[in-house]
Length: 332
Image (cartoon, rainbow, N blue to C red; front, side, top):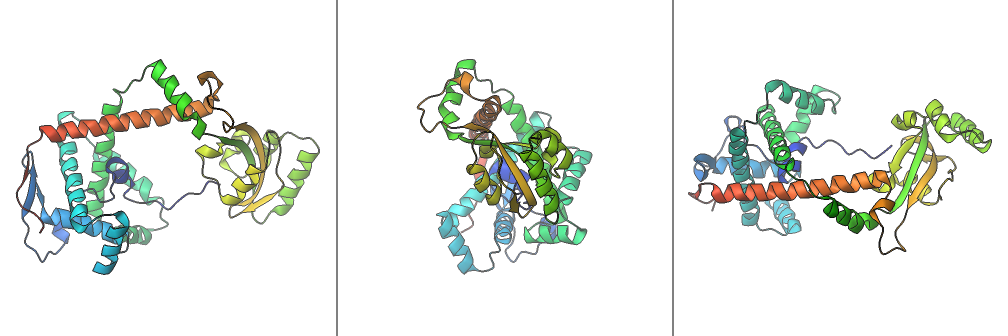
C-alpha cells in the first residue's frame, strides 16, 4: 500500500558514497580511444583516466544522457561545471581506495556467498534474466563491474557499521535531540483494510459490519489482503510512511477513532481508521516523556543515523589526511 519505487540497482553505493557510480570499471570489456594513464595514486593504488571516464559514463547511462547538449543541461541543473563533476568523481574514487585499505586493516571482508545472496535478492525485483540484463546495461554496468560495485558497497557498509558502533550519545543529548526535532513529526497514525480492486462487495460488507459495531482490528485480521492484517491493519504514522495520495487524503479528514468511507486506490479498496494523532502545531515544546514511543523510536533512529554518518565522514576525512595521495596528471 506504500508507494514502492523501482529498485535502483546501484543503491548500495548510493547509500554509502552519495554517488551511483562507485566501483572501478570492468575495463577489459570497454574499448577506449584515449590511452590509459594514471591520474591519481592513493597509497600506491592507481586511479586512471579510464576509471574516471567509466564512472562518468555510468552516470550518463543512468540519466539517459546521449549527447553533449544533454550533458551540459544536466551539469547546469546540478550547478556544476564539467571539471567540478570530474573532481567529484575523483574524490569518490579516492574514498573507495581509502575504504578498501581501511577495511583490510580492520579485517573486514565480503565472502562470495554473502555477495551471491545480495545479488540474488536484487535480481528478485526483476521478472526475468532479460529484464535484469537490460537494467544493468541501462545503468552502465556489466555483470562483473556490478558485482564489484555490490561487493564494495557491502564492504563500505560493514566499515561504516564498525565505526558507527562507537557512537553513544548520553541521556541528556538524547532528550535534547528528541525534544528539539519532535515538532517535525506531526501527523496521524492509522490502520486499514485492503480489498481486491475487483471485490467492492466484500469491502461494502465489511464497512457495514463496522457500522454495526464490530471490532476494526479483528475484521482486518479476517478480511484485509494487506501485510498489516496480522497486526490488526496497523500501518503506523503517516510521517514515517509514504502513502498513496488517495489514502493520505482520506486519512487527513479523520479525527482519532474515526473510520473512512471506502477509498479506491491503485492497490484496491481501503477502509481506514485513524488510531492516534500527534500534533505540535500549537506547542512550542514537548517533554521527552510525552512523545509517543513509536515516534520516539523513529527519532532515536534518525539521531543515531545522523551521528554515525557524521562520525563516518570524519573518519574518511582523517584517512584522507593521513593517506599518501598524489595527483600525477589531469583529465584536461
